Image (cartoon, rainbow, N blue to C red):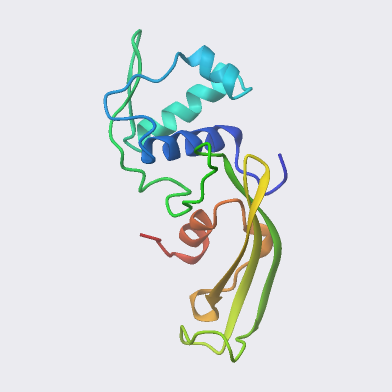
Length: 170
């Protein structure tokens, strides 16, 4: 895991949230046993339980002691990757990103006008699904919303927007 990667339990919970959002798991469906899921994700049962607990906190699962984990609803608004909709043909895929560059610069003249400032931060990232590069992403943030610090960025820009810039993506 790189210095900007999300923890394993968040990666797992995000993958499962995407599976729920895509309809692969439906409301009321019981998830596979925890030991089996931990083996499939190549992680410990403890890490898997932390991921499932996160999904429970997001309102996506109902955890029933001695019975299993059940899909509660198909609402993934709290998901880190709620807006990242690229998927592999075979379905799903664990998303992650590598930051290529973060630069504060004057907005190019050919950029669609936005914001209050003449300057903006350009964030360039490679997007992956299951470690397969699937996109080069370029994001522009107006300087008026704050200065973006590359060292604080992780796989999820949505968390950064909320925690460092006070912005909520809906």
